[in-house]
Image (tube, rainbow over all chains, first blue to last red; front, side):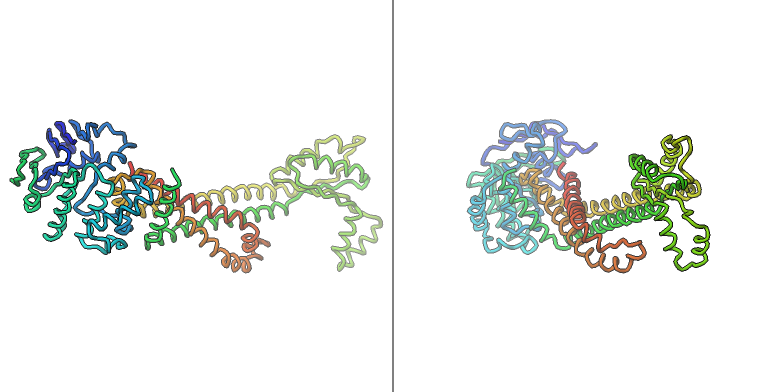
Length: 225
Length: 307
């Protein structure tokens, strides 16, 4: 499904990634671990075509992401649900509208939005907070809304960049459980983290990056740094 | 863009504007100041035009004819002058009318009237009062009069005198002053309009800058550039539209008050009369400026974050 082919990314003289080769199969749950600055976020940015590799190629469903013209990027990104450490909800939209926005952007009809958004709000246990704005929600609630937004269009892949980085242990546990459930339903998930507890709780494939290189790829879910 | 998307963009823009709170209010306020300046410049241009026209209308050249010139000859000259493209109007005053006017003007001056009676007959000449479209054109009109053979039937000129020579200096200076005033006025209008437009642009850029993270998120969830840009343009247009209506509303009492106080200073130009008489023009200029300014500034400001 995803294939990084000898990908190198340099910012001026600094190499953020060096000849990374990595493949992810459909329905996999992959945790990418590493210290801050190891290159985890750069890897995700390349996958989302936010950045272009200096060398090598990134393939998504056999399509070279770098060959996509700018005008086609938004369609490509609709196939991927994104979850961020800092939630990145739209501040002047309610919880309902934040989730609905992803559907509107994908050109879904009003009827589809009216039927799917309440269902997703139920799924993330926030039906009673539908009319709340992000600043009226706790960190955990914001992250659940962000996950709702990521899954609303039933994407093939969910990419989560440090999704539990700003959460307390209870909310961290809840978010991990939600992600595991989504994966069990057949969605591929790539998560970056440096939280050993999260990796252990997931218990799936772990890719370790150090100084821009993949140093370990463990199918048994071992967190070694 | 389908109707569904357009509706969503309009609704989203409207909601964003309402929820924008202080940012929306600040944008409307700055746009109001900008449009007030533009509106004020419209009034200033009108006042300038009115004043220059008034001054121009006070300038004329009179041609006096010899007493032997027949009315037919003088009217022929009048016809010729009216054919000239630079002539605005020609008024004929017969010798009899000139005498009547002279007597009326000196009705309280018995000494002058007695002297006139002692002279016997009518010593005053018939004349043509010529107004040019532009004061700089009097010279060419006078040249025409002096060169025209039709004015000299039987080789004798029927023109007694033209008062252009003694007025030439004043007319030339006035022409220069009108030209300079018009150019300076135009430059001032352009300068203030450009300055106020730049301020409005900067405000809208700032408003959009505060939403740059939001724009980045919209891109990442797969929204197209047009779908991201649309609500911001709608917000800009709403801010511009509201500001235009506020300015129109404020101008009503302001012109009424200022008009009543300054009408005499400006030789009859009344701001309130101009406002009511040219309301469609002001409405069009302000609303169009507001909407265009808001929309274009939004497009330019957001472009940077969509690259």
